[in-house]
Length: 141
Image (cartoon, rainbow, N blue to C red; front, side):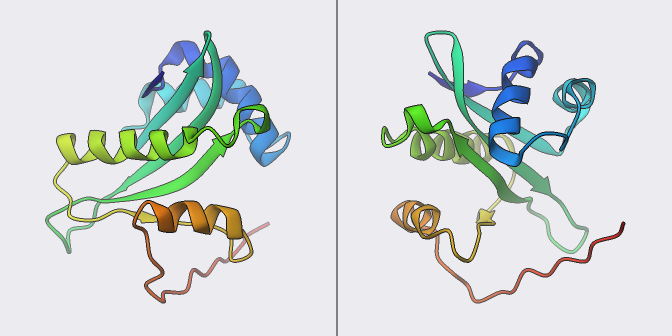
């Protein structure tokens, strides 16, 4: 089943995020707070037999420069035991539909690794294309 995440999903999402991003990237209490209070993010989960097997995070970017929201898919993860079942595609489609029905928008963006060929192939199969922009980061310690 593909659905929106709820506060009751916090512990399972925490475990999935540790598999995806590694340990110590967040704390369970902070994840719970985000699930309860972050109105700029939509989190979609895939559930099989009451077990979460994947998630998609969409940031709802909004600027005074534009009338519409610019949703950006920032995270896509499916537990490796559940891959190759089109779960990521279904979660992304759910996220797109949910956002189109609930926010004014005219396009989606997403971020993926330059060397992540499998993810790029998935996104291309869903209609996403490289627009030639460069993503830059500045870290602060």
